[in-house]
Image (cartoon, rainbow, N blue to C red; front, side, top):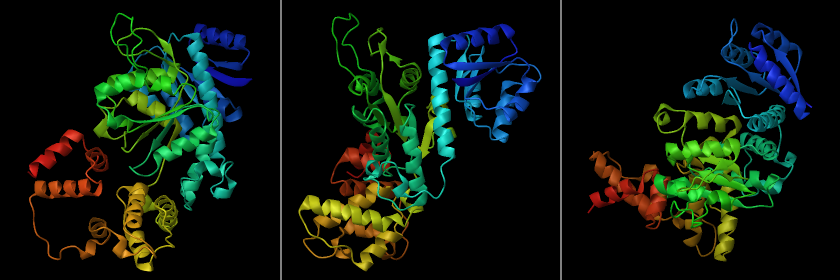
Amino acid sequence: MRKVLIVDDDVAVTNYFMVFLMQTEMFEPSVVNDSRQVEGLLEKEHFDVIMLDLDMPNVTGMDILYMMSVKEINTPVLILTGVNDVDLAVKCMKRGAFDYLTKPVDDEYLLEVLNNAVEHGVVHSSINMLPQTLSREDLGNKAAFKHLPTQDTAVIHLFHQAEKMAEGDLSVFIWGERGTGKESLARAIHDLSPRAGNSFIAVDSSSHSPEEFSSELFGRIRDWSGKSKGMPGFLEAASGGTLFIDNIENMNLPVQVRLKRVIQINEYYRDNSTEILKSDVRFIVASTQDLTSSRYRDSFSRDLLYHLMVNSIRIPPLRDRADDIPLLARYFLKEEAEKAGKTIPGFSDELLALLKQYNYPDNVQELKNIIASAVVNTDSGMLNKDSLSPYICERLLPGEMSGDFIPMKLNDMIVDYVLQTLEYCGGDRAGAARLLDIEMDRLNELIEDNR
């Protein structure tokens, strides 16, 4: 049985939770009504999860969270308080709490959150125990990461973390710049998870308007009469499997609130409907942005953010792992040459040197695009500088661009860069907008400025 420490100065509350948890026969509860005793108890005894009140005399719940952080006591903490305050909840999550619940709490929901907290504790204990010297050969399933070539020790360690996270069913948040391989990592986690035999559905929230995405995600009923079944959403399509949502920062606040409810209690309703439906989906979400920054304070739910970040992975950009560039270049060359039905033995030393010195704003995806373009431009022999299109060559050779500095109007320079990006994407405006990280309307405005 899992050991639970209940900390609350209200004896009636602790008695209720103690009896309830004992009746489940899943948890072994211990009770502390005087919060001054908690520090000493945690130094002597291990608990799988802590249920903690905030408003207590002498030592508050926030004081206990701070003490645990300083002493590196990593037991998952579930905050139970009578105060429904989002800012306070966010503060607790930032201090390391696993979740924040407002009393009174539904018994069934409490059990679900406790089980999730225990799972989180087990997974992160195993992650914290991983040696820093692990190699790719030490992975339990190397094949799951075959589309993520690397020799970087930090990335390999990240794969080991992903393997541990895959064992459970908690939501995972992947942060990384565009083109770093977030979806490939999400697929690897799915393939390693108990849900591997079911669907993996990937959706990019930036490819829909905020208003449309609600119906795409949750589904909708055509009218309020309930006579029409309407359209199922991604949640139903991914039932039993994994739903990967990229660019989550593009969701509007109402959808974020509804998503948090699905993640927490597996319940949702379609647009134009009041019928509560059950969800059986594991969520993996991703963003290119630092959602903790002040830029997103008003547009992204702090409550949802810190809930997601409890189980998070950051993929480093390609410029921070330059030794991976030759390895990835050879991997993409083999892949693209096979697609094109060509035999291309490798790279000239000059081209390989150019590839290694570039900083790749679009990371691994940009390197792949460069290699794909070079393969198209080469019939046989080694890839070399002449295999590159003029635009790509100009990007890789900043020193060979026009010599003297010539001032330009800022807007003209922006428009010129947008047009070059559009050319790079073969005229695909949606692709160019994604690379530039701007809305489609803004892209169209800038293109119109050139006419």
